[in-house]
Length: 250
Image (cartoon, rainbow, N blue to C red; front, side):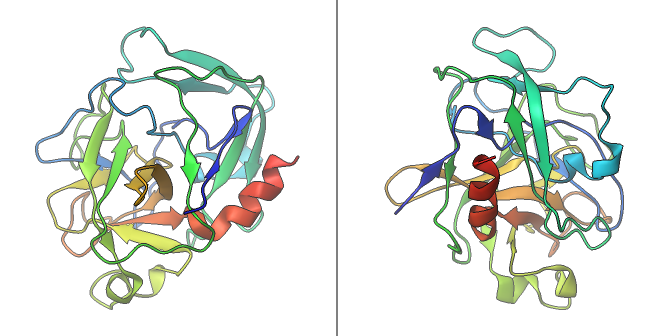
């Protein structure tokens, strides 16, 4: 399968944490119990960004934005991690905060980054590719450990099987809120993303063994982080390959 890596100067940004609330709510990772990711066990777990740049008008010219790379525990200084400045933030031109459409952005780093054991590029899926029902994927993030619970210090991970569009768009699932430019995963009522994981990646392993970023955490249920039949809804990255390539040329 053809793959496209994000290069060292422009990649889906490291996860900048924050909450925006609107039912359906934006998310953070919930596992029952939480399952910390082993440091550096999977350096392919790329950071991604969606509505963390939710309103372009709120992006400040006076604040300093930084991207953290190679991080696992947010409370300590870690060998192999670093912070890089931001050159430009590209928010999708058709981002709709009310309907949560086109929930994707790219951050161009201010300088190239040298790859290492803890910092690797992310693979993009083939354009317009759609994963089948129950395809196993992993979501990662530092969001709340459970509904209204504490924010995680260590990076968490959770298994999220894909829920096909035909199922996810049913009236008792997500109905009209889901579009074909999105991908649903989870919804078993046990493991989920939660508030604070917004913009985080949904990584899925291809047949050739490569891990690809198929989704970006977009929204979930206002009823709770791990609500049955309310899987996390992700921006489907494969629907935006042309847009990503266009911005990478700027």
